[in-house]
Length: 291
Image (cartoon, rainbow, N blue to C red; front, top):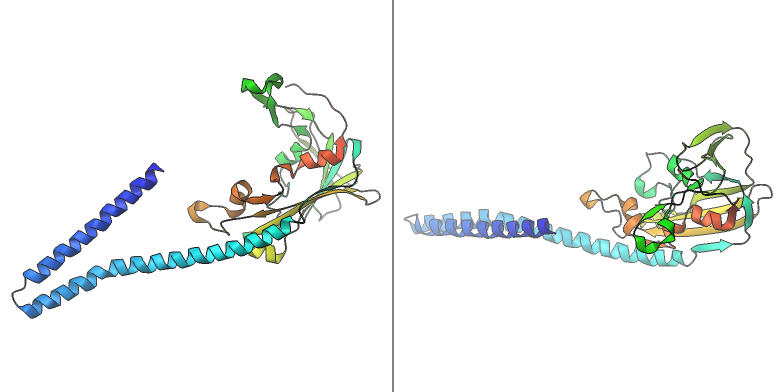
């Protein structure tokens, strides 16, 4: 904030300095030439040259105003569509299952980098869970809780509680699976390729955005939990995300990343992960693992 005000003050000083230079030039043009026709000519020249910068500045100001107004209108249109989408968002739990030891995560097919970020269906709302750290979240709970349950202590530690014993991952492209395991919070994430899964329940992570959504910087994501044996749907969670900056990259801004932190979402993104999955297919009760 201090740098901002210093910059504004410097610009004001430069502006007044420019005005002073033009006035001095006008005085010289009016008084230095001996003949009146020459005086008028030099005054016109100084006025012409001196007006270039103010005219350009005014043109830029008008352009910025037009851009801002266009963005306001687009945001109003986007917000109206976002509010409409939010009417269909939320959680629907049809059935819960206890004592589940492992799950299979089924993701959308990978999207090529040649698709513009705005229209790339890589689930900005919920995340594609295409990293080892995301998989690990379904194996060991590393969320923070107060030490000894004392919220007033100001000290926190990872829960370290086992969630699922294994996670199998399908990327939707190949018939094989990768099975992940992790004994405790301090052990490495183990993975192996398997031809056939043993998980009974699947977690489908999908991008549900439409072209109209993406044209207005709205992204939709869903979690669908199914019984892989009989294909019954146990639960669904759908949500939407809106980038209020409408794709602006000012200040090295990354639109979807910024929107996940500062944008509008319905419902909360913070619950669109293993937190929701655990509510439906409840893990086998494990033990707390100490490091």
